[in-house]
Image 1 (tube, rainbow, N blue to C red):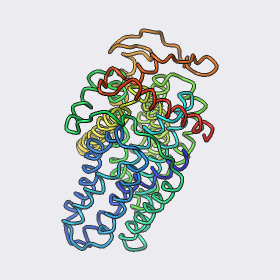
Image 2: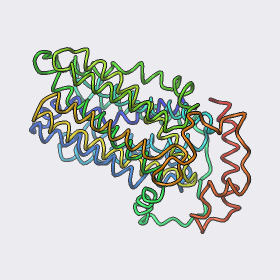
Image 3: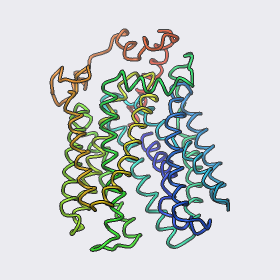
Image 4: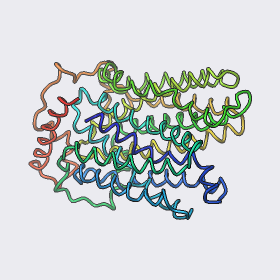
Length: 448
C-alpha cells in the first residue's frame, strides 16, 4: 500500500512541474513573451496553494477513497485541453484549475498517518515523502529531455496517460476507509479560521510549521539560484546538463524509508529534525564556500540538502500527525500552507540576493535560514507541552515503542481524538470511528 501511495504521489505532484522545463517552448508555441509564459508556472503553483487551503481540509469529512479518486479523474479529464488548446489564456486558466485539484498526495499523507502504527509512522510516511520529492525531480528532467528531442506537448500527453494509470491502480487496490467525522456539522466557510486556530493553539504544530517554512526556503533558494550559477562562467553548462544535475539526490531520496525505519522511527521527531537541519546547514556552508569555483561544492550541497531535508520533513510530519486525530487533514493543511509560503520566500529572497551579490549572498541566506530553524527547534523540547521550555527532558529515544508501549484507556483515546473540540460529535461516534481505524491499522501494519 505504501508503494502504491508513493507511486501515485510521485506522478501526481509531477503535474505541477512539467511546465517549468518547457516555458521557452510554450512561449514559442503561443507566440507570447517568456515573462508571460512563466505566468503558467506561477498560476499552477497558486492553484496548488488554493487547493491546499480549500480542498484538502475536506478530507476530514469525506470518505477518502471516493474523494481521492474523484479528484484524480477530474484533474485527468481537465488535463486534456492542456494537450490540445491553441489559446494561451485558456491554457493558463486550466493550468490554475489543475494545480488546485493536484492535491491528492496531501490527502494521502494524513491517511497514512491515520493507518500506520505509531512505531512505524515515520518509515511509512517516508515512502510518500520520497514519492513527492522524486516527482519534482523526474518531472523537470523528463520534461526537459522530451522537449529537447520532441514536441513539448508530449510531456503533457505523458502526464495525461500516467494520471489515468494512477486512477486505475488506486481504483483496484485502494481500500475504502470510513469518514473520520461522519456526523459532525462542518461549516466550510469557517474552515480557514479553524486552520489559523490550530496554529495559534497547538505549540507543536506551530514549531513544525516554522521549521518547514525555513527548510523550504533553503531548498528553493538553492535550486532556483543553482541554474544561474551553472549557466554562468566558469561552468557554462547546457540546460540539459543543468536539468540532469537535479538527479544527484535520487539515491538519498529513494533510501529514505530505510533510514527512516532505522533512525527516525526510533528517536523523538525533534531530535531527527535537528539532525537533518544540521546536515542541511553544513551542506549549504560547504556549497557556498567553494561553489563559485568548484562544482564539487554544489554537488555536496545538493546531496546534504536532500538528506537533511528528508530527515526534517519526515520527522516533522510524523510529529504533527499525533495532533487531533480527527482533524489531521486540517493539521496537514496548516503545515503545508506555511511550508509553501517558505518556498515562495526562498525563491524571492534567493533570486534577489543572487542579483545583488551572486552565489555567496544567496548561500548566506540559506545558512541563516538553517540557523533560525535550529533556534526554533531548541527553544521547545521534544516533550514540552507549552510554547517554550524543556519540560520532560531531552531523552533522544522514543518512550512509546514496543514493548514499552502502554495500552491506552478509553478516556485517553477519546481525549487524543479531540472529542472535547467537536461537541457535535458524540463519544459513541468517535469510539466507532477509532475502532474502525484501529482495525484497519492492524491490516496496514501487516502490509508494511
